[in-house]
Length: 95
Image 1 (cartoon, one colour):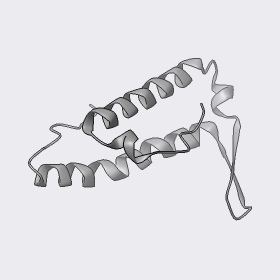
Image 2 (spheres, rainbow, N blue to C red):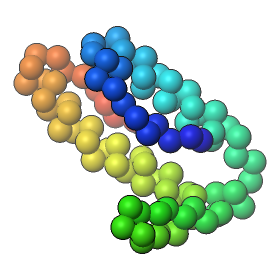
Image 3 (tube, helix red, strand yellow):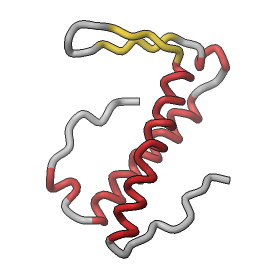
């Protein structure tokens, strides 16, 4: 799945643009997950290179779990800010 590497201010100028952006990200993630055919693919090493030259290797499943956890980390503060501004996101529970 190609990374989103550049964001321009006009891409997020209004809520409709932001919603469209995230819908396209959701579609790409779902398509990628659907393309995985075996547990061996989830165990494949994912090598991440850092700007300082360092590298980190993790299994693909670990990187996918990191993405989920990272999203969880930010969901609560964003929900709190929206609620304070009078726009509660409502129930965000998965189950």
